[in-house]
Image (tube, rainbow, N blue to C red; front, side):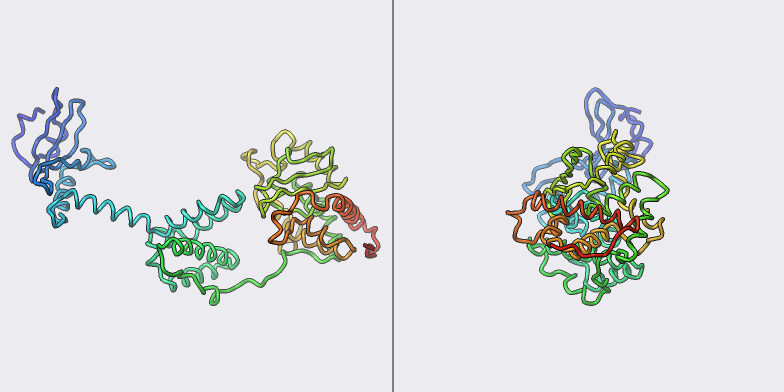
Length: 413
């Protein structure tokens, strides 16, 4: 319809929807300073005419016309004008009130626990492995953000954190609860050291929460090891998983280091595996000597997955490694749930090598255990010649255990 046909104001929604555009932009008064603007291209929006603090008149855009996001019907536009006028600043400036509201909304959004947590995560994740980063943000998104994410972090009381963490404990995830508590404590530390909080509500809570006894990662006894080795070698399911378990038993590497490994890290001719710094726990390159048995297994594995970049490519997405529980689930299928883990093979290797007279420094270097304070002098090939001899002995020893052809004599240093 033409605007000359308008009979009454405020403008009815049928009028608003049917007003025709003209060759020039025009505004029609709805009432109380609220105007309906129609552009030549047919777009329609709302504007408020108001007087600034200096007495001059100006226009304030309120939003487009319609029922979608960021659009206003006639009733919504009128309600917005009433709200603006009701909250007008003392100097009479609607614009001053609008700016103040936006500033308050922005401040409120930046003061939520989730906003602070993501700021902490962005700072810390640069030094983490991809796996650690995924697990950390995943734990926050799963457990913490649904409870506290949208709340101002300064308003969450210590008792609320206590009740929340105890509720996590009651589900049986004690170790995960401890990790979540540590993350949240660090998040508040960020707020405190940057002047945005005066105290940390998680400080001291650990004294009143359950703690898991400090213990080595689950592993079988030395007497049970031969049976485990035989079970692994006859693993009836995926051959790549069988090979992965065998490599873990003899190389004493961390499960993630092997599971995420790519073929380009290996020099099979030289018998070496160079793990890049970004995949190592302490962000240092680590060189692993490969005994003959490992080389044989790797060549067998290459026939299976050698056409992919990764040693253990995922089934759905071959650019990503197999699940982080793939080896643990295999041990479970073999009947070793709770009795043996991937990390437990590292403990077994340390025990056997130390008990058989190998230099503890060579063992620690193989496990990539380096004392703090020696970062500058650490070298990926530390004791490499000695470790080559040691790890070949260890692979031979495991073969003898698996076949039952070993006499338990300690090796002289």
